[in-house]
Amino acid sequence: MSFAVFQQLTQSTIVDFCLVTSFTSAEAVNIVLSKGDHLEVYELQRRQSRLLFIVDVPLFGRPEALASFRPRPGAPEHLALVLRHAKYLTVLRYSSQMGSVQTCGQHVLTPDDPEVDSHAAGFQPQIVVDPQHRCIAVRALPGRVVVFPVSAEANWQQEAGPSVSQHGGLAFHQDPDHTPGLRAPFHFDARSPLRLHHIQDLAFLSGYHQPTAACLGQGTPAWGACLNETGRCASSVLVVTLDLVERVPHLVWAMHHLPHDVFRIMPLLMPVGGMLALAKNCVTYIKEHGPSFCQTLNPSAMLGSELEKLEVVIKDEAKLGILLAGCAVEVLSPTVLLF
Image (cartoon, rainbow, N blue to C red; front, top):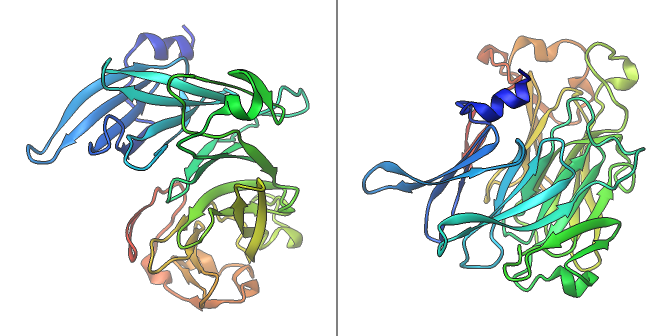
């Protein structure tokens, strides 16, 4: 019996994703669990200190990315997900009248081009949402980001004709009665205008007038087994503003010569602002206006000469003995993070 068939015939006990959102209503606190090819939706009842099961949603595949966005102020949030080995973004809404989850929009993320490898080994799609719900961005390919502007009056039929059509080379479908709240998308690549080989991580920042995203990538790929002199300090963080009117990104500022093993960027809440670049052996705080610094977490961080190329203050905290490889992190407050 194949593993795919086994997953469909048996109930999954592994939680792939966990999301806190207001899905069933604008006031509800819902917990959405992705377990195999199912979504389980719960409501948190704080007074009773318990979870109330709402609905189980069977899917035609296993989600690889999951996020929620608010299509308009005061409305319940929609779920956006990308299924495994799928080339499209799916938008789900909760119908309080029917007590069920409905698909209200789909959009193809990658073109039907045999030269485009949408199933690169080890690639994990990513969906990030602007803190003010002005747009969502999908890292659909290692070198491509697709941006969907959020609008309460969004109607792709007005922008591109019929309900199933072709816009910007990408096909889409939307429910004419329940629009997903997303306008027709645009995309930008890592090569142009960022001059990166690929984009490894993506995150939206707070405190900007326009939607602003930080892109982590490498101009020249490097890895531990083949780390020559040109591959050292190969990581860069580029911050771009997304012009939703002109539908183009604009580079604002950048930070180069970061350690090659930086794997994630973590935006911090206001009023602190800025972001943390997480590597296995160190953490680098980056901010557009103000001093940046790098803090070592274990003695291995000082091996080699990578940190010498960083033009920031190095704070030696090797006594902590912490290794961040494979860790998960959540921001609890502007000054507190949970690793």
